[in-house]
Length: 564
Ligand code: HAS
Image 1 (cartoon, rainbow, N blue to C red):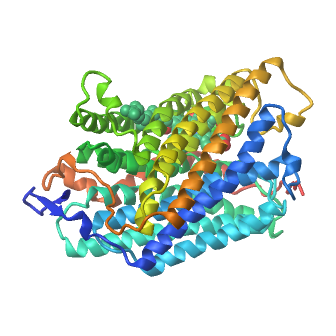
Image 2 (cartoon, helix red, strand yellow):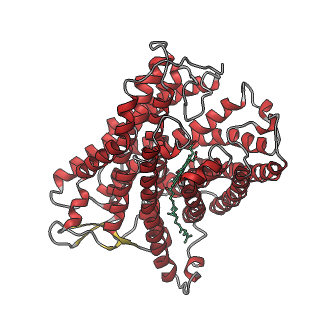
Image 3 (cartoon, protein in one colour):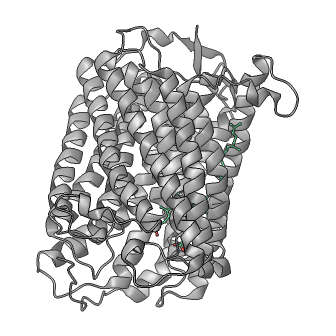
């Protein structure tokens, strides 16, 4: 079987590559594998704390079963950091590096690959020490004036550095490819992986300044205090686009790999590039939608961010149509007809596909709740309630996490040269997660609408409302099913790594496009990242400039508040 990856320069003729011809040096495969192991290892620890939190909503206190755990917020910090930072960074550093290498058909820079892994590991070790010893119970948002030990901030900085090193690696590999392929279009698989890191490079500047310039020196006692509003704003400068850094690896798979699993084809090369460029342009100037209730930021600027938030909704809507059309091609090829017949004909027995289809279905609800969050007046109803974790467990907690599990079902076997072990269990695990998260989110969402607060240890809270009881039970039951599902996922992974049958003939799945990339005309300009980066910077200046002018110089006056 052959796969179209690019058009020959100037001719529009597709260049055909033999998928079996691609391989990476063993050492590079091993580094990518360790990124994935760290990512899922972190998820394994995080979900244990997740179970405790879900049960707390149902009124059950199991925290005393955790040796060394000092309080609820310590567990919640570990849950958030491990899932939102370690799982996502480790997975992206591994998966997108592999996608770019496969797209470009060449190996990566080995030194940068190793440096990124060690930076992630060192950062994780530092942050773990701070979190597990109870010196960093500040939650993943790290809001000042809650103060953590300096090792926590340094640890998170090193983890961000690991993503930058991966990004440098991708751009270095792209530059080497370009030298040998003058005038050619960047292969789509590499383009989408690199565009994701280009967006993140810009987005991560906010948290880098927050941690390196303000929180780290403050935690070391080098500055008299901190400016909570400025640091919070810097956090959300990164904190909204980070959700797209979590999501886009899943989109890379939904666009480029899921159609292959389904036997379909992606329709448009150009539309796919435009979607990723829209994320580069629109993801960052949106952060104030997390700060609608914050004083000190003008309503006018919040309105600007609101409009941009509705803008960044569109690439996801385009994604829904593009991916569904690719799936429909696959379903119809398999004999499915009519309105939904093709959907039932998809190969649901393939766990890599089933997990991602179910993740997509949940993401429809995640997207709808996101729009409600973004609406200024409705945000006043749900802000800081359980609704918000309801929303993000359907986005990052499922669209992303369940997609990552689906991707792992082909990627770990490829990286390890072994067959997936426990296919049926893997499919069952995906359905269990799907059912679990729908029950869990039903509880969180309905509880939130009744005013059930988020980030609260409900099992020990001195106040309650009757209407929270049923919502809490839904949350506890759903969370338990999600936990059981992740345990099964890790079991399948361990069985595959240690007992999977040897197979060195596996392919990295990726799709053809119905419309091959144009080699002339305006579409060629889609590959010139630098212009889109400049435009993104201009939009950021419009969205954040007025606030920063009034916020600088910062007022470093608020002392730290420690929970330990
Ligand atoms: Fe969000 C809060 C608005 C998307 C994550 N969000 C959060 C928080 C997290 C998070 C973690 O405006 C909490 C932060 C905290 O700790 O305080 N969010 C949005 C909007 C979108 C959105 C407008 N969020 C995400 C994604 C996340 C994520 C993605 C993680 C990956 N969010 C907000 C707002 C808040 C917020 C406010 C602040 C709330 C507050 O007050 O605190 C949009 O980007 C969503 C667009 C998505 C869609 C869905 C498209 C559907 C697709 C699936 C296609 C599949 C189909 C099925 C059709 C429009 C692409 C076919 C299937 C077959 C099987 C055939």
